[in-house]
Image (cartoon, rainbow, N blue to C red):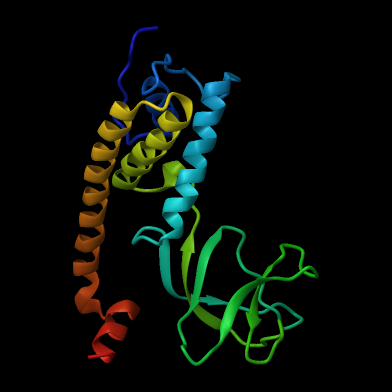
Length: 201
């Protein structure tokens, strides 16, 4: 089937095909294929996406995000929240698994040893988004990061590993430039992170 270019950011299918071609496999027309290598590639891409987004980037992090307790005074954490950091440093709240909760994950008061908090808590929160919900710079980096892991597990070529690692680092640098550029834009808006930096001086 002849190649037909599309002028949109990288899709999940594009990322999986790039990974498959890195080990000499033919690209797919759809992600519904049951080919073993494509399933492994897609799983590797998904796991890499989660791992990278857990670090928290400008595009998947909300600062001072309010989370409210339920009728029992307990705070259930959003299912796609990857990391939670309470903004008020005097509050000793952490994420903990509660077997009594439907979703399992709740905010826990370590000082008072209870899940009952009874107040809205503002947190810095990082979200798990789908591959096609993140910016192009992040898609490129994650696809190459996943590709290196995939290639190493499937064929283990030292030469290819070195080449893909170098390209991955280049793309990480581009993503970090985007991060800094966005931070500079927000610097004079006195966001939460900037305010804390100034307060420590």
